[in-house]
Length: 204
Image (tube, rainbow, N blue to C red):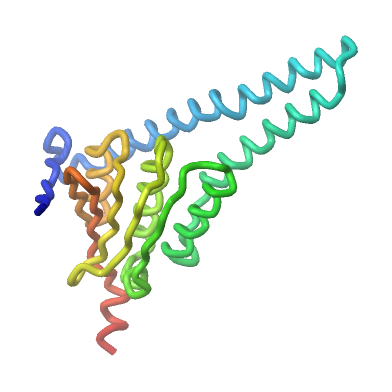
């Protein structure tokens, strides 16, 4: 069956001059989402640890505190790991590390198919955006997510069989780095132009 991808319109037809302001609002939204995750994750685990400590003062087994603090520590470490940029050594390596991190945490797998020639064509900003998009897609994934990274003519294509919660916002982020976000019924595709640096190297 032939599938036709449909390019999403930019949210509210934002003009190029509006893009910086929109991206700043999205950054604030990201911070708010992070605060919610910390509140519902690490902070709740610390609250449980505090209750366990109170129980130990009243004579409960001290192992309760140890286990509760360990749970809070693991939760916070995982969140901090996800916050750090991971693309210094390349997008393919960062995605491989992310897949391993999910496996270690007992989360649904990230299954990778990476064309070795594709990641070399990405600039730093494009690689960072691709990585953050994949993180967002995985955040609420209840099943394994399949990802491919390949060359598509004079561009680099990242394909996923899952979607972020707000595709339009990610379409704006893609525009900011000269990329296109294309959504279809069976996949999400992020298309990047090759970086100037790599184009120059290829011409040598």
